[in-house]
Amino acid sequence: MTDLKKRALDYHELPKPGKLSVESSKPCTTQDDLSLAYTPGVAEPVREINRDPANAYRFTNKGNLVAVITDGTAVLGLGNMGALASKPVMEGKAVLFKRFAGIDVFDIEITAPTIEAFIETVVNISPTFGGINLEDIAAPHCFRIEKELRERLDIPVFHDDQHGTAVIVCAALLNALELQGKRLESVRIVFLGAGAAGCACARLLKVMGANDITMVDKTGVLHDGRTDKDVLPADLLRNTTARSLSDVMPGADVFIGVSAANALPPELVKAMADKPVIFALANPDPEILPSVAHAIRDDIIMATGRSDFPNQVNNALCFPYLFRGALDAKAKQITEAMQIAAARALAEIAREPVPQVVLNAYKLKELHFGKEYFIPKPFDPRLLERVAPAVANAV
Image 1 (cartoon, rainbow, N blue to C red):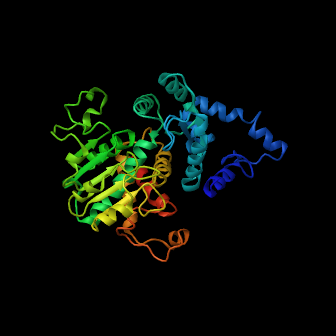
Image 2 (cartoon, rainbow, N blue to C red):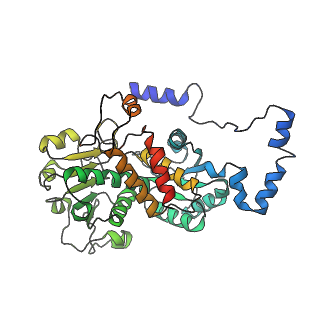
Image 3 (spheres, one colour):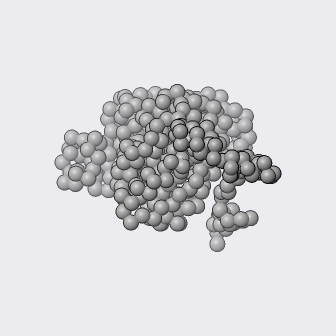
């Protein structure tokens, strides 16, 4: 057993299994406390909520409670592991919600025979929560699930694998382009990977001003002549004669990979425009290693999905604060405007002097905005102070 495997298993098992527990927020040590916590006193808030459902936000934890929900069909980079096996990941998500934004979470793993049954299950339990975070649900049914739940529920529904990733990618790209002296409106962007994350990133970048985006999947370029275009995202198809990654990479300013390990050949890195940006986000092994890319040319700016390389695209920079802002504003849904506000706030934080508390957390003497640091660190206290209010103000 490797050291990492043993430490990870011990972490989850000892001193008691799992990463979550439920604790009371009110005293219950006397007979009087008991009469208030339960019968007969509990009848009073029941009556108030029955009279006006909005009172649930006054008398229960609904306004600070999020459901992290999955069917286990796309767990990390492991694939379809099933609902039960996904539970450690959902518990981990709950830990991050609590640690970074003070939000309570119930992790809910659903085994459902159909997509319809999954949707109905979430709808039926939704009164308990102030928001729904969908997690590790495979494409394409993740799109339908999110869409129907957003239409049917009056609380925020957010698929983090799509939109959380999109917010961080947009924030990081704004800063990377700033460092490279380029503008989002004028760069050529190539995506390798057209699943949930890739499509969401491309769409948010388009809303923010990107004009030239080409998507590439396992079959090739997403163009309007594809024989399978009925199952492809119509808004991301291009009228082009390009058919492969090698056709579209020459002269590209930006490569964003949400695909598979070693999927970006070194010769295509050589063909990119001057001062290119490469986001190799496949986990655990990126489309190209930073050491390989930097050995090819010295004018590259890179980000990956890994914590052991500079500039990690980490969804923990987004979802706690996005939900904190949405819950504080009692938002009915999380809009594109809220996502853009989060992305811009994140980008601004990275450009400012880094607090000592962050340097201490990462055992660093200094850290400055530049090629090795253009995305904030997860333990930066300014994330809660700045991102959550920006989101709330965008409601």
